[in-house]
Length: 106
Image (cartoon, rainbow, N blue to C red):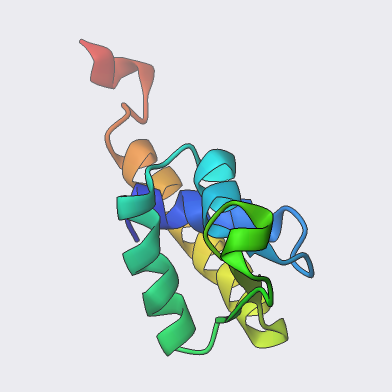
């Protein structure tokens, strides 16, 4: 799992029942829109996310319509599991690169 994917999941899991629009997710994850949208599309395709466009007239609100994303119940659980597995993999790989005994330092 890539670091940007992990950042998007962490942003969505901050409040898993909350709907967030794209730029909110970008800000929370510290990523650019071009990075997050393919990730969001992938998660929506596998059923982790659901999305919808807000029901506003862009001329009235003076901006484009926002697309809101929200984790599904299953998606939130799968996201937690995926992040835990990614963290465990990182921990395992960093522990393998560290000396196991003081004698290994010589």
